[in-house]
Image (cartoon, rainbow, N blue to C red; front, side, top):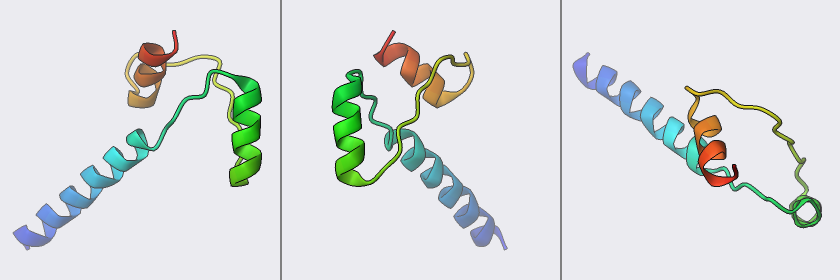
Length: 64
């Protein structure tokens, strides 16, 4: 039972790390549009952030 609990916690931690590290901010809208078109993805525009959420903190550090 303990092994299963450890495995669940480990998987949750790995999922969180992969979500946060998968973000690549683009500062140039034209470049972002080209990249989105090439990779068949959508563009998300972020106008505000929070002081407790990891992606928001990353946005604040890397862009502002």
